[in-house]
Image 1 (cartoon, rainbow, N blue to C red):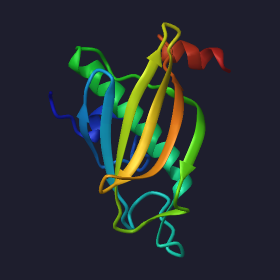
Image 2: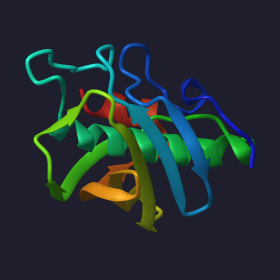
Image 3: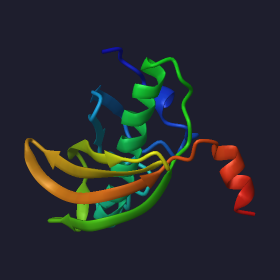
Image 4: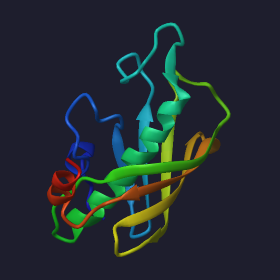
Length: 151
């Protein structure tokens, strides 16, 4: 498995890259991480952390990193995708507090030819699950054409 920097696999510009690292990826799963610091996007001084609803975006970016690492490994280009929905987001915390090292694991449940995919996602720290969700994403065959059609 080749190692990729997070910037190589996420089609985002700073400061919108919320993850620190793509730890691993396989054909059907991937793992990323992010340590909560005062420089984390959406860090709230009053809360001393990041609101836990941002976990949905951590999951979505982990899906993108996993998918694009697999694309690059197959000699294809990084493409944009779209977060369609999240289902059953459950988090035991209202805030991911400063110093937490979040591990985000994504497991592909299915993918169809239309570009729709579903993933089971889990954010954990020290092997303790903190948040779970099912995330649905869409990656069109021609993203530029798809976006132009939406105008």
